[in-house]
Structures are given as C-alpha cells and as structure tokens.
Image (tube, rainbow, N blue to C red; front, side, top):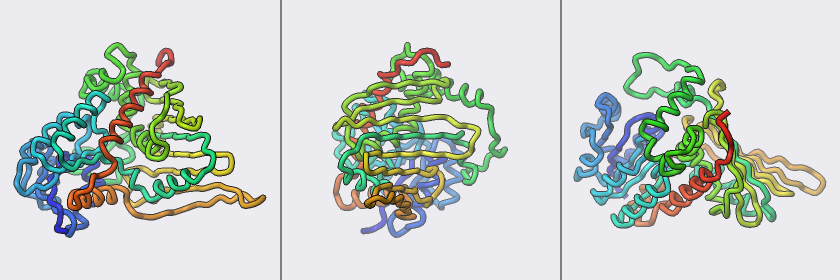
Length: 372
C-alpha cells in the first residue's frame, strides 16, 4: 500500500508531542501534505519543522485539497463544528477524543458521519495499549468479577509537558501557578468561555459551577477511562451515585454493570505533584488485574500490568511489561490500514455514543451539596 497522504488540522501540543513524530517516522506509511491551525505562528513553525509547504488557517480549505486523502483532526476542545465542516469533503477523518462535549452533539455528528459514508475513527489511544489488551483478556477470563476501581491523579497539565519542545518556542519558560489561579482559569473556560454552550447541554445552564466543571472534565479527561472500562465491560446498567467537590476539580461516581458488578471512577486534581497516575483495577475473589497508565505525554513508556492470583497455597504476583509499542502509533497505523483496506475503523461511532451516554448519566447523578 502506498503512503497515506494526510492533512493535519490542529498543530498544537498533542499533535507535536505524539502524532506528528509518529507520522514522520514512517514516510513509507504516511505523507504529511498539508497543515492547518488557527495560529499562523504555529502552522508556520510546524510547517518548517516537517517540510510541509501547504499551510492553511481553515480546516475546510485543507480538506478540499486534491492531494489530501485523509484528514486528521488533532485540535483541542469540542470537535463538533470542525468535524461537520470536514465531512463536506467526503474524505476519511480521524478525530481526537472527545467527538463532542455532549450526547446531543455526539448524536448530531454521528448522523452526519453516517450520511457522509466515509471511514471515521475517534482517537482513544488507550484501546491500543498492548497492556490494556492483555488486561482485557485476563479480565474476561475471570470467573467472578465484582468490582472495578478507576483513579486518576491529575497534575497541572502544563507541568507534565515541559520535557517537550512545542513550537513556536514560548517567550518565557513554563512557571508553576497557584492552585487558585488554575481553578479560576478552568471556571472561566467552562462558565463563560468556549465550553459554556457545550456544558449547558450536559447539566443545564442552571447547574452549580462545580457540577459544570465536573461535567466538562468527564469529556476532557475521564472519557479515556470511561471508554477503557466500556471496552472491557460494555455499557453500564445505571449510575448509582456521583459527587463533585473541590470546586469541580474532584469527583467520584459509582456505576452498576451486568452481573452486579460495581465500577468506581475518581478524578482528583493534584497540581503540586508532578506525577500523573491513572490506575484501573479489576477485582474478583481469586484474581486482581491492575493497570497503571503512564502520562500520555511520555512516548513508548510501557504500561505496568499486575496480575495477582493463587497457585495452591501460594500468592503469585505477576508483573508484566507487555510491550514498548506506542499506543498513539498503533491507533494511527490502524486508521491507515482501515482506510486502505476498506474495513470500518475502531473505536467506532458506537463507542463515542456509548461514552457520551454514560457521561450524561454520571452528570445527571451529581447529588452533592455546596462546592466546599
């Protein structure tokens, strides 16, 4: 198969840290033929770095170029408007999660994708993590799964990206910020900024501020874990409880799955500790399967997998390093193979819709009192 000629929409952090190096390392598989970004400085800096001359501010113009075979949407935020515009070119589209920031918008995009009839993939890179795939098999072999525990300890996002050179080079190096400033910035973005209309469709425009922030973080961050759990257990039967505190920067929910399984999802902001930690534990009476995902900003860091089980009277604790394969690489290679081979990419629209439904159920269950 010849290289897939791709156009990139959104040349910021995740594109430069993970996706562009993956595409550039295999010129036999991918050819970057066009770039688009709202920032002229960014698109020019990245264009010079990767030798791409076709540069645009508008993703629609990029998608309309004849030599662009597929469009990769790496921009941050809600992707609804961008996806609807890109689909007009009737070309395959890869879009970073989340597909949209509410169930109604996700359903709207899904209808447009089906109407366009083009290959379409949502980027949930953890689905391609070799340790996750091995863990899923181990969980499916368990005779009696009883409890799933997900905990995300999230540092200041900027603190965990300083080892990358993201262009254009900033005028001043990154500096830590006071937690109150970080909280204020998050509230501004959710309450009055770009996410306001999206969050209104999740919890309503009368919801308290900490509920609105919690709902936004479900789509921005916890969606990875929501999708990973669904990839093992399927859809939940109901959300039993959900609480938000710390001005929206901490939350926990309990959901019920088939077989009377309960799943606890917790997300906690820990801005003063430069240590990202994302743990998934699947617990049964005779076996425990634990994944600890590293930061998504560290390339080729293997995900530790621990399987605990009995061997007669002995407790065996197996520590697995399944692979050094990069999940971001695996998902883009899968997309290319699906485009060239004519097979539906996965994760699919059904996954994005299932994730959005569960998120809405969690947000609807927020029952705590004041933010403090």
